[in-house]
Length: 177
Image 1 (cartoon, rainbow, N blue to C red):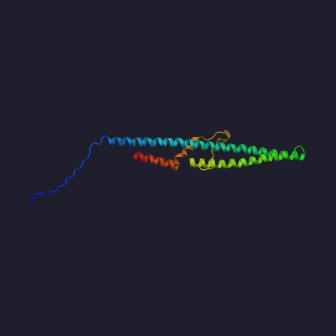
Image 2 (spheres, helix red, strand yellow; image 1 turned 90 degrees about the horizontal axis):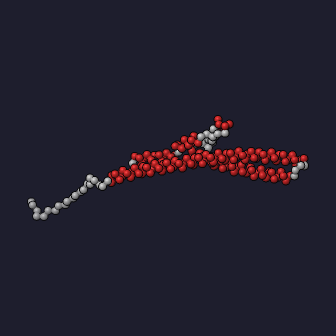
Image 3 (cartoon, one colour; image 1 turned 120 degrees about the vertical axis):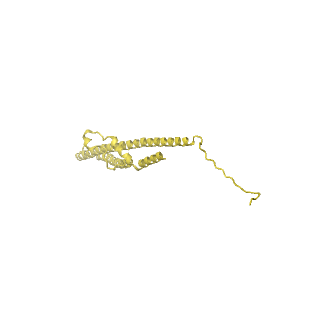
């Protein structure tokens, strides 16, 4: 009934009640990560505002350049017409017409380049802001006053971008963590 040898096994477990401020360090780390994400978000917004401003001014610049070159092309056309009349009357040589016509052709090519650049600039502006490519950058009611719509009107649509929404959701998730 009572054996002279008995086999026993002992198991011990420790549960620390205090781990040397590890919990507080984890809380501080989470706060630091949250502040870091806030700063990354702010930096992304600054860069986005700069991109919107650059695209906005680029479109306006190209539109004005195109208007200026169109006026210049009209003047060349009038000059060619004038020179044709002078050639018929014998006041000018036909080489003068050819010189002006070649300059006019170069200008027409420049118009095509500007139109292509304007289309690309509009696409960039549309991508950054989420507005359609046909969005006028000058308020139609203010055209006679030669003033532009405020840039803030175009910056309002930034919050609708998918990458901004994703960054906001990541920030909210970080806050929850």
